Image (cartoon, rainbow, N blue to C red; front, side, top):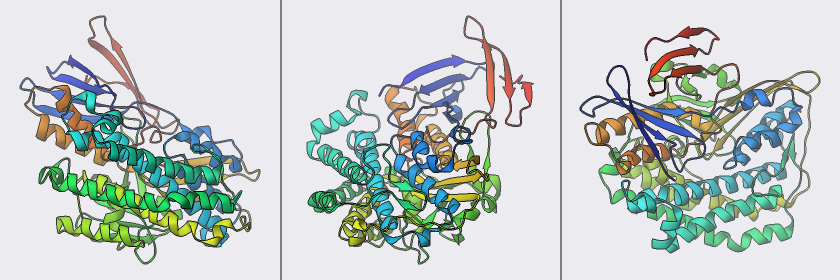
Length: 500
């Protein structure tokens, strides 16, 4: 919960200020600012400073291990990786999503709704509500869930119980709240018993009520701070996500839809197995996280945002009544085709939480979730792509295997990676508008973190594959002065960088 602030002078007489680590996010990142003599911000960057390399780790493993292995990418959204991997290995045994047994499909969806509900509750109540309830520049001692429980006990307790309920859905299906097992190639390994179903039904109406209350809470917070909340860190961007063929919000399976900042369609219902024809990634030397972009628009204009704001912006409607009413109210807020407020991620996050609670109730009352036709199989294939809407946005898993079922190639585009450019742009905007020319203090610097936290980044997931990461070696003398630097670029070339 504590920021480490560091300052240093470089050769251009620019002062370097570092916020390390960024707090109340999953994983490790830092923000660096370069200031001139008048404290004017000359550069602001978000750096992802950890390297994990899961794309290489899982090569050489038999494909059926992947749904369990990839969960270790993260303890916050393991179910999203579990299901994306499962959707990919379904194809390796010849099963497309439409051919999955009905019971298996609905169990996976129920599992995923539990995951999104618990993740959204965790981020909103535990990580972001201190900023929203106490103010962005409040005392650092108050910026935590303990303070929220102290001053807003009803709100804090509801957040804790909403998350717990989502985790209970996960536990009933996969055996554990974190890193359980459920999905297998071509289906699921168990159905719900009547006792498990009835246990989850006991509290679902209360969860729907609390989720609806959380939507009302964030609407009140947002609209009580206008135009500040509409303008803070706001960007006009492209948006990408999955939708159903009729344009409905879809979290488990659909076609890729992308719109521009005016709401005009860039592409719609693209088969996600062909994602590489539409999305490429750029590597930069100062971070372990890549920069995806739409190939048709190029690197400069093709970057986009994913996640709750993108999904609610892109969809035509939500197929549960309370969440749909909340979506309509949200979209009416700006009067534009697309809502661009970065802080609106919080609002849409809770609209989705309400949708998940409503959807869980519907599935719990569907007898198929207690069915026993759980696994299908077809003709063996050598390549599979699984795409799902993780809490933080569209998640891609792409595997290739050999004739012995051993994984030979892996590509992951993790949700946070797609928001990388947007997070950097939001950091730059906040630094220029709210920090530039002022004496920097810890409360003031928290504005940078507020902008990052709006995206709910999962930084552990979003790192380079081995063999593609840039490497920088710095030689610093006893006084802390940088005296030499070598840079290994993503293509393997090594050069001395004189610009330091």
